Image 1 (tube, rainbow, N blue to C red):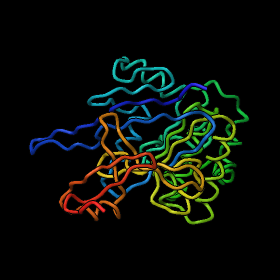
Image 2: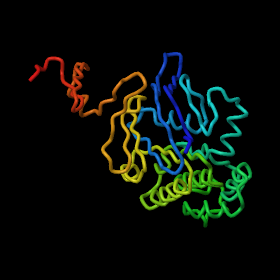
Image 3: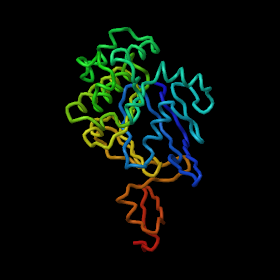
Image 4: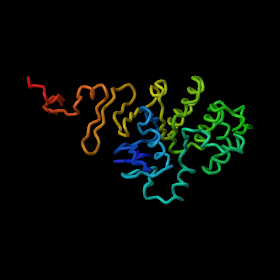
Length: 273
């Protein structure tokens, strides 16, 4: 099964009058259909920058990014707009950025369905999945922040897009509604979509098929199911050590010793036994 998302040495740099901020530093990964991936990490680790790129809302500063067979760096603005509308569901961190302020909830979904060629039955199914069936005739100003967030998720679900990207889709929700949204996203993955979301919530990360952790714009580890998290070695051979191990090397220098049984890391001042 071919990858829905493939990136190599992906970088994103933001420039301002005061200098440059390297939000992403050489990310390499593949995402395939039928799984829900959670991207986790502290504030400032690059989660939103990565998801914005995966949603075809921005272009990388360097590196390769392929979404559904399209080279994002080389695609025209028109091609990316068509890709976003027809094949990618996207939930921004601020749900107000996803909804049309003048349309009723049901009409919001109807507009998305028209872009994706989805039948009308998907409208009610998507609203019901996020618990908004009784709010179908309400406009965004009459919805709470959490309801607007669930509406944004419902819009992303319409028509079963091949790729669904959601930035903190449960951040404003109570436990019951967060579980409802996660159930809907997991169902979308089970039906064949590639789903990738970001979250700080351990209850959310524990339900993921795959967990990716970012630190300082670098993919530091990944795990699947209950397996132990694996540190990531990037294309240049750099190994991302977990924080508890990194603290053992305060001078940021390590001796690497390999033998037939594995690899050992030791501080340079350690003697050989």
